[in-house]
Length: 237
Length: 306
Image: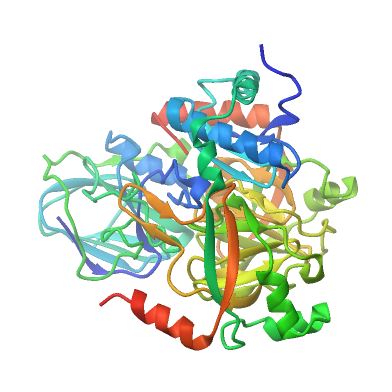
């Protein structure tokens, strides 16, 4: 029998899409549910499920509505959450250090963020580098990961007008989080630096992303020269 | 083989989409008007998952190198085969050496071209759907659109008689559109915002892409401030901080932070996709249950539908 408290809410959002609120956006118990579900979807590959996506407390599933009802899904998810943790748990201990160059030529919004937060550029960089972050969600585009939570002193709303082009590798902040743009896209976050190299590679059958939900990430400040060196080393010949 | 002689960046190869990788941020992509795309395959009795060419904005010329039957649906205007005007959306035989032209469009934005058994294109992550944003799919698996000189393989086929699409299914994309919308919950909006949204008419702005269409209305909707990024649903209508809607199209990102006022039915989404800058759009609320029955009917009719 499923635990009726497991599903805070489940509802249709379109003809073939069901949304479930799993819990508070950045709480550990919510991330554990996501890990259990990811593991179960991976091993069972249920026929009624076409795709799924998770972000900040909300799970969205594209399903085959002719094969299953919303009540049946609710029961299944409740059972999955009631099970013990899955084998993937050990992987969530993985940690990674990512070099970031905070040169103003790459940190396009460094100056404006410094003004908005009343912090010097050095204090700002220090605030960004001096803690471990958890991967809270992945998605938006392949390789994009949301890391949190950032130092309260650098919490800012997103830019009023999103940039039409944020360069690949840009490291940016908004609200209580920080992100890396895997490739050039439009974006509304404040860009404060750039990482050298690439955070994701796409294969023909699969995607190899360096960051996954639950991982621990720390940023390390590097100079523009070090940035150029690493970029040259990684450049295709 | 189909030899492309003239193309633009809105001419892409599409199937029903790339599913199974949304959790890693991969867009579903797929046809902007999936009803029209499914009809193209359906008229040839292909599975609707077969690759089609989405011809955005006309301006397409191609030569059929071997005999084949093709179907062409969706946006319509000056369409011809070897200089003879095509009578309307339908399936047509093309002898080797025939030239298909999709010229200026009178109605709609996206025309769909299918051939017997589909174009033969190598899939990436399970789909041939072209996604320029993700650099996936298409003829070269890199998300590029079609260009002149490209050659798409297909199986030669015995020619059949012309078969026009049944009249009752034909669409006009020139008329003002009333979109069916499944309204969201009131977490992000005052109850009055829904009434305001449903009682005004909008115009399609020039900011239209495969990711989303921005609409412009007389008054701004007061939305809550941006919150955590949560999964985005195809057809979702987000209200930006400026108080104007964006409708999320096939290449939409997987997560987003703007408040969601509702989600369009898949049929209405395809109809909206066919509207050009300046055309009028308004919204009518439908229940998810009602919309789902319609959707499942459509899925049964075509064998699949997304």
